[in-house]
Image 1 (cartoon, rainbow, N blue to C red):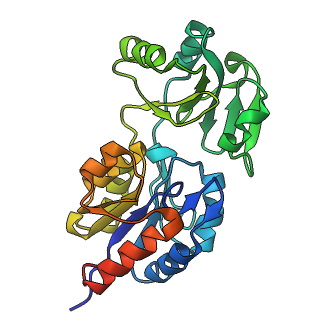
Image 2 (image 1 turned 90 degrees about the vertical axis):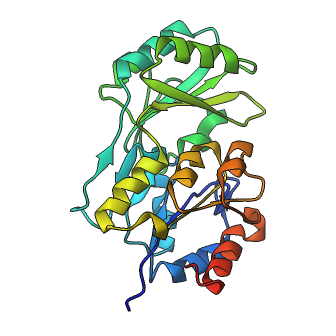
Amino acid sequence: MKKQKFLIAIDLDGTLIQHFDQIDKKSFKYLKKIAKKHYVVLATGRPYRSTKKYYDLLKLKTPIVNYNGALVHNPSDLLFPKHMETINRQHIFTIIRDNKDIILNIFSEVEDDIYLWKQDDSIKHYLHKDGGNLHIGEFEEILHENPNGAIVFSKNGSESKLANYISNKFTNEFKIRFWKSDSFVISEIYSHNTSKAVGLKHIAEYYDIKIKNTIAIGDGHNDIEMIEYVNTGIAMGNSHSELLAKANILTDTVDNHGVYKVLKKLKKEKQL
């Protein structure tokens, strides 16, 4: 009997990478081995331009879930049906106009093109500029297409005001989530239809992979839907509290090779 292939979705930051670019070499090496027999898919909030080097390092030929599911594509197979979600650019213009008292900066992306409101070196790590075309200026002048989403940098203590504004003004349009930062509040505005789970469903249907053969590993709030969707949902050590409540398995932290440890264990137990 031919052994069934698994779909294994792996988050990047906080799961395989820490501090933007420090990779877990041991987990990468093991994943590269696993990818020869199964469908290993990178599922990340990052754009493709800053995912590509890790995709190439793993020698993957599978689709990628970028922008937390707003872009699902396969750079190795142009016949794979690309899936893309966007948000209405006019609404972003409105958000900026209505919240200039708290918004410090904002950027949006259309695939690998970056649209930045103001030049600011303090947020350069979040832009992942390598390989992307950067446009800077008033959004109404430079943003001519609907983007995959928006990242907002606002004043400390502005979470409630911004969350209430989005909820009341764009109830059926957007969701908002917040990231950790000491310098400012970072929030992500994205479509109601965007999630890593939607991206994985698109991939699983394409390869005809049953839910029982799906595994996902992540650490953040943006991994919750993905962990709920798959059969085996794995949370990294120090994961977001809401993710921990949804996961089937808890593994170690990225600096202690959590991905390697849990996949090795599943392999040993013949669950993979």
